[in-house]
Image 1: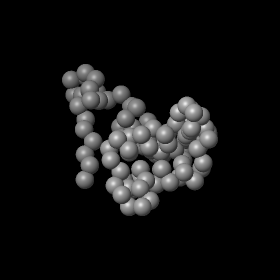
Image 2: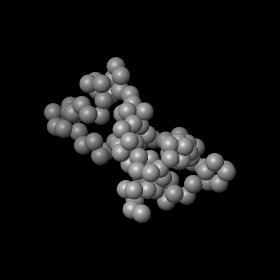
Image 3: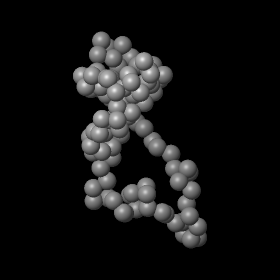
Image 4: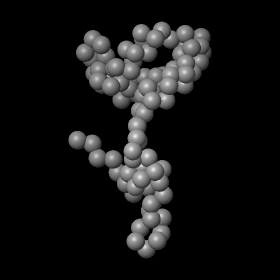
Length: 97
């Protein structure tokens, strides 16, 4: 069985369990996910969502920009510094608490 076939046949209950495990960082039995397990599970969940047509707003990692779309808070908007040069988006770092 190939990876594609495995994801295609993945039971929706298993998909939801994988998604919850990613969100919580642990398996249903309480064991912590390793970084490798989390990465593989995330890839499977994203692939499943694309293959099965899960609506975009229900997909893992979806960010609702709502009123912020098209504003300076939207990362798709091109920003310029005071000198008029484009700002390198790689200079920004996500801060996690």
